[in-house]
Length: 437
Image (cartoon, rainbow, N blue to C red; front, side, top):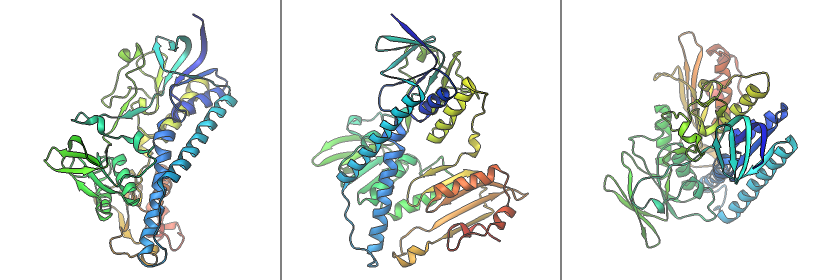
């Protein structure tokens, strides 16, 4: 059997794998990328991109419905089939672009499932070797161990729907479950969110999670907290479900959003040799090296923060480490996080329980274009230490995903209350609530 050698082999063509392959090739390395599904990985095909398309549709629909209450706009009509086709066309174009970019960079692309043994990787009977092997295989939706689990939908199903169910129940109150709940409620679906904790978004700051929870309730989402989905059965026109607490209900679709499982268990012999972290992902050091010499891991397969920007940055950094002049990994303490509900909720760093600056703000549009009753005020909480240095920020507001990036940059630079006070913000704007003297 003929063996082909490369400088680096990367397994997985998601955000991290693509970033590594393209940068390594740019630095002069001979790179092989192996992908068994679609280029772009979860984010492009079954995650961030289709979700943000749906979120944007929900945002527009929600605004038009609200504006109809004061007579500014007429009743909106939403066509899921048209959106689904435009979504699929857009994603297909992205995949084609990735393949063209790899080809232009000189990266060899092989389709198939990789099996690793030592420094060799086998794909459909062909064997490849490399000095470095990079595992960037991502993660998959976790499977619930309940009666009727096969009847559940997961994020892959939801983000490929071409029709809109009239009602859904969602198991899981993390950021994915909350986003799906908010999005589908905004599109007119009856939504029940079941979560096994007393509050949603337990990885988010409590004040932020509480604000989001109130917003979901105000939107008409039924929250079933401190309970868990225990059984699902087929019913006429949908699915019946039962919770551990004895509650029952019926929905056209029931979605499992209970976390993700790293794809590290089907890599061949190496799967038994790799040391895993408590998260189930591969344990790595500050150079993304695993316990197996010459083998590295990044993205959701590695025990780092499972976010697309982290995977992309780590892929680029690893390429510089292995084929360039070296690099250091992104400091995750400065990473901002956002959940795309309405409005988005974002945070970075730490804010003490008694925030140095905090407040709520109602957008001008709520008074002019919609009925303000029942609409959720935006909020901010800014953390400052005893010396006035920015320690963190929490925002629930339109464009929070953009605002939090700027505050993260200010925090990283050692920004202070004085820096915030010296900013003359645009008027009227949300930013003027926490900037300016």
